[in-house]
Image (cartoon, rainbow, N blue to C red; front, side, top):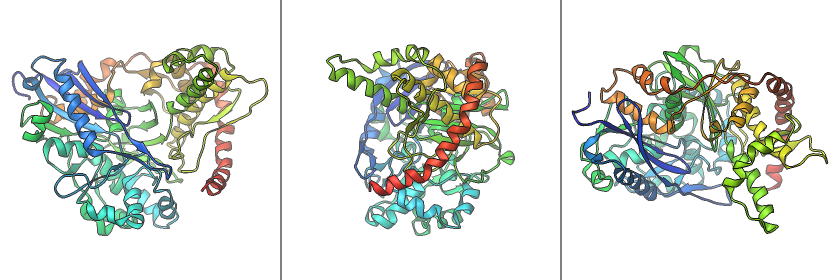
Length: 519
């Protein structure tokens, strides 16, 4: 149990767009939050990179900002847990300084290497061990590409970390990663350890020393270093827990497991992450070799996952098109004003009138299929369609994409837990629930990812005996009632899904041809 007077847990969630530090009391009630916008750069070659130094500085800033909102924060913190954006490659020298800017999960430069590795007869064996399809987001693919394309970058590095691991290094001085990212990238989800055969299949045996120690943040904490204490304003030796990957923490905080029962959870934010918790012995690996197998911070429980590269980014694109046109006509409008009109536009349009594939990311798609050349598109346009019809098609594309991902994992879930930006909109929730054909429940938890990281820390320091006890207090009471899908809408989307799925399969050779033509 935590020391007397230590009544606060901090969860750090370093996402792609924002870094947050959130304070909770020991019973899981959110007290205050602070955030700093995240920044990254992109290149014409598909690069997406981020400064390691700035990421740590921004993280420390959020903690200092949090202290301005809570009296005596430093003296009251029992522990902090840290999670962050998944995949990507954060290379660090032996002296702890960055060897290069981080390659983010958005980076598409490893596409040629992914194609080569996926064509190898050994790729299925790698998938059977990791449970995870290879794509350009992952550190394994990125390291393999660096080894062939820019080996000098790897020669500079002593350790290859992920975002949360880099922050943990700065907080504690310890070089480590967690079981989730380690096993779905380089290991075996059954053992939660590295697998030398997987590393060899990626052609990285010579670079095996780059991989850090694996530690489970529910069992091990390290003390906040003197340097980190000076930068964050917290007390030296405050316990720090290394959380699991951000989407595992978000699913944990949103209710993927409650009352000892496994469920399904979709995070509909900039990207879409769709996960279904189950016992490790119940897992079935799909024939296509796609998706992720994410171990959860609960013994014996894993979550097969499929991830849409872009979710609400598709809506952002549609609204930006509308905003740009209005601005050119002398009627500038804010993004917030356009967001406020979404439900009205949806009400003014007919469901299921147009097909839209939501592959708006320049990195293509990774779930439930992997194709870096996949692109978004409308099918079924006619001269009678107007902007509300296009916007509805985009929103419905998120629903179809969600259903497509769950279809790759088996039957549709009996109940769906929703989190992320889209979960706040009843209209968007209704489309997703109807597309999947499952009742949806939304948690009133504002910061599910940070909460998941703090929950891991709470178990690590003994506030709770195990994760199930923590879930019973932190998660279950915050779940709203089940919202049943609209039967008429569900029927429409049930008819729409087969042509949606058939069309995206038929378009794959077209995307490949376009990719070659545009090189």
